[in-house]
Image (tube, rainbow, N blue to C red; front, side, top):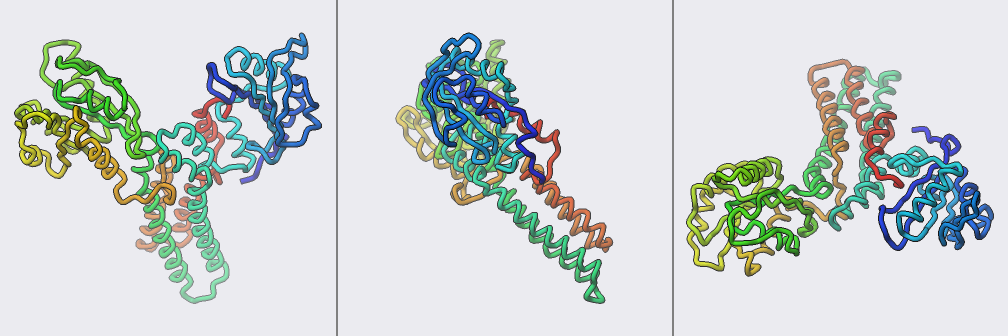
Length: 464
């Protein structure tokens, strides 16, 4: 991929910190004219003369009115040792909407352009500072919901996935080069057989490695996006109490009155490094109340969308027809059945529920007495990460785009093997192998289209 030159780009500026009041806000400026531009606004040292990677005290002043805007610290970083590989200046001002916006407006009226979403990271990619998978990992790092998802994002930011992908592309490229040599300068009478075997063996080798990456996709997506977890059951079985326990706060209203929860409540929680998107649903039961009916219908929809369903039964009451219907309705979903209120006299046999639940785990708990809840958290982790190595040492695929491209690359290799089996000419089989190489290149950005870049970076926040 040819690297763009910094001179092809204008100077951009944006606020790099979240909006609102805080200790510090940062206005970031990047481009050939970044230092010259901020120097016009800065009362202090001549920024054109200061060493690179230094921070300098002074004030931002409106050059037209000479109004002092804020007391600031200005960082100066010279290309190419910057994130964008352009000159970058960061103005650290007092946090707050008014001073931050005033400083941003001054940069814009003095020659900068407001950056598009993700444009700083886009320039880092176009200048060869990072590859496309690392650029996407920047956003994953920002949105990481647990320490474990942060570790995975950091690994991709460090280039772990890119290294693996480029090794696969190099293996394919070596094969393609050898195929060309064998065709143009045959050393053997059976050159067709030798070349076909070469492609066959390496296609199997690369496909195996792609399958290993795809095997981590489910866990990777859970870490990146969170595990949609629906807590379901009849009214007043303890669903909201369980939600509050997992959240470690009283988010849901808990009463003895059936139907207190009438809508779906969604919250994120960290369970042993697994980000759960907890969905506390309205109690599923027959009702004539119009509002409750809507809540029940939304609960059923939440079950259909969930990655994990936690069915809560009241162990202190006999198993009802509604309980049995709920167990039947949630069949086929990855689920855990909880027998809550074990602190009260038991009227449900665990063996009976287990027979109705097949191989799905059935666990007795008491939310009131915090009994069995640690075991529940362990079970959730086991269901989705059992047998998976520590995310610090494993390359995990977390991105939908990467997963789709890996699946397409695997299909291209299947086409290679099918073509060889059907006796297709080497040059036609070679087309599918080249297609696989191109698809893998789209993951790292070694091959890309402008439309792809526009779509990807439009999802980034301003200032990143």
